[in-house]
Image (cartoon, rainbow, N blue to C red):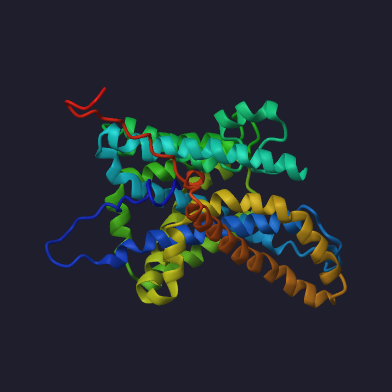
Length: 382
């Protein structure tokens, strides 16, 4: 998710026909990315502003943890689909020389990971709130930078994933994907050190989806050519049944770990089919999603900062405003509150990026260009 102006301005791999190219097939990745980032934001908003503080107005309504349930159900969808799309975008870059890809695909993501981790740490110290964005003490910063153990792990993962994909490009495509799937299953079992639900484990568990998108772009392209509403709706309904079933059955950890890969693969397939269906059937309605899908970086990097800064003020405003409402009305607030805040936070993130560009602070979202080399013309004064 490096800056859209640099790393993701790489066309998805296409087989260009001599006649007209169907551009609607290139719309679905941006729509899918937009929906995924919105799911990330609404998950963080609902968790940090409702679930964790458990405010009195929320308890008064019987603590309807509906967004927690939604977040758990959609967790197998948002990051696997996001990484599969990112890998799909990166597929054409794998054949390019290191000189053309190392800086935008690796250097920029690592730079942004370090920069925003330091910014998150500084803001956390300033406002006095522990956050998922950065470690609580400066002593833990080196470990956080090396292990991607906090909320900005996605940037670290993109650099790491591309390096692995590039180094294994001469291997048969199925080999690195299969190895990554095995690694994901092992991580899901919880036998690896560290917090099983931590972000370091997320790096290991999502590698398979990036490699699948990067090494099998033709398969993704053929899948995106299937514009069949019945197929998308049928597979989507089946996926919902499976996800809800797993939510209530609670299989043993090992069984759950082995089920994660096919379940998430199904979620990626459904996500692609639905994105293609909506972008082809409703191009005007999905245009805002396409614009957002090309600018996911500021939303991803900055919304956590906004949450830190606004968490207490929002709680101070919400408590007297919502605590006196009848129980039924509070239920409506619980359903709408995260959605409204997600829309507001997303707009603020995009506006912040626009402002930084106008103020000449583009380095917040892109690796600064190296200084131009000075050349001396023959015969010029020394």
